[in-house]
Length: 269
Image 1 (spheres, rainbow, N blue to C red):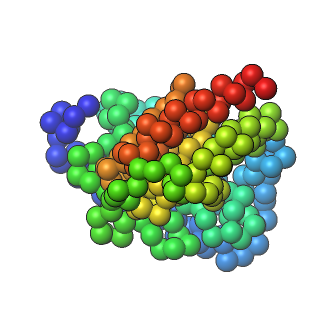
Image 2 (cartoon, one colour):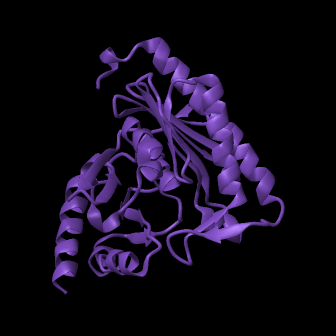
């Protein structure tokens, strides 16, 4: 989908709704972070946490979207879904970085994206700990707190790249992801792991990171942040259908080659 196929007033409305709803959900999370969580459970594994904060944030997002745009579809990480008939769908991670949130690590976010005919056209990521709102609309650029953001310029050397990654919750998946590190870490400046895919993607957009990669992500993990990164001049690639890679234009090629080679080497081990 191109910007010519998208009515400007629709894009304006989706952007405004996304900003308002994601900001409200982030405010709700902040109210939870000031007191001890009472209900923390696990999902796919003993380390995959979900709390009343996750569920309250998603319930808020669902209710606000239903009020503002009742004909749109919705998919959320905590199981919320709505059938739509407008051609617009929303994808939300109501609390990206639940483990960080639970342990008091200030790296978590609300991620909300709007799609039209399957193409993400609006993305908003709100980082309450830093009071930062990252946003983008298709063809209109990316922004952080109202200031335009851009990926780091002139960074194309693999050996000096600061790269972030992430890990899943199942033991087998974590072992598979960890198997890439012996190849990647010696080839770059250093590796970071912050625990929120949405924030990682936005930090590539803002030049704090040169690249980010992670395998086996869900739509809600990357839908909003990927658009922010692309609209900031970054490149997004899905390597072999499993590894999401976001990088500066000069690093997307070298990192793609490195990751594919490392994955093949790990598969043979």
